[in-house]
Length: 312
Ligand code: RIB
Image 1 (cartoon, protein in one colour):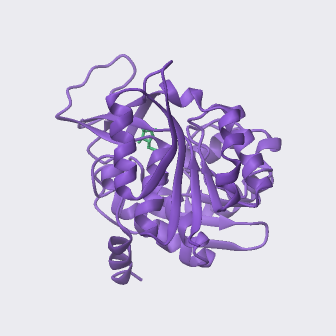
Image 2: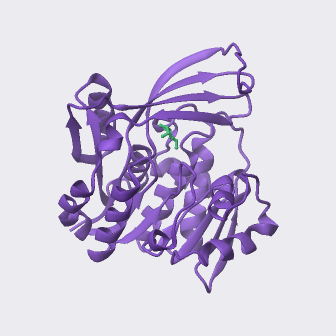
Image 3: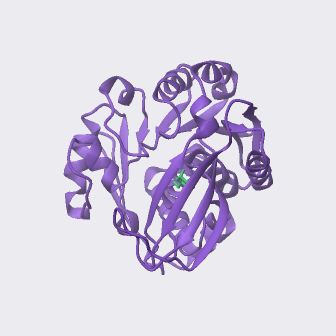
């Protein structure tokens, strides 16, 4: 039987505008391009896990959408990538989630989401997903679902013997009770700072060991600190590993973090070591930033293997 990986989280239709620079509060700027693309942190991670595992793992998405065209498009896109969407249920009470995204000339973004149906993913849905979690090596969560749902999901996934991965995005402070149910916590630089009670800001690789140790002390079994183009740092209380990032021309960083998470989980679920999983995840994320849009930017496994074969 194929090993499995599940993602419980959000599906959004992204409305993306490219602009030379992001507007300041109260300012209007004129952008130069608009498109819609399938997104949502949960759906991006499920799409990435399906593409990056290329059939070696069964990938299952659990989420909520509305009875509308966006919901249908998002489910169809995930199914085409190879994910099982039988756990994505439509609700009548809300529309499919959307995200308004601005991307600047350097590929940086700002995002506002309207959760819609994502806010209706419930603790009961997590309980109903128990049999799905039972067969999984990893279950991936993010914070675009209600907190009580994430907490219930983490607990049930752990109960059923799966490893849990939490992407603490969008950033917020989290309690020790929740973090102790996390096997792999994957903050980016700003999320790490916020989890530690500081102002959001950048982290240099030389600071990563200290930051990762402080995050580990909050309760997760392991921390993977995502440092964007600088790479990623792993700490599990004993082992420390740094994987430098790959230099590429950045067009749009949307979903790079989601691609990284899926890449790391897929590699670990396939039995690869942490160092190899970090390298695979960094390679996948690097390719994703060279392309526009969330799910359209996520590479196939073959692309990642090809990319890494040309890099140290
Ligand atoms: O992580 C990127 C995602 O964040 C976008 O696809 C958008 O939908 C928001 O959820």
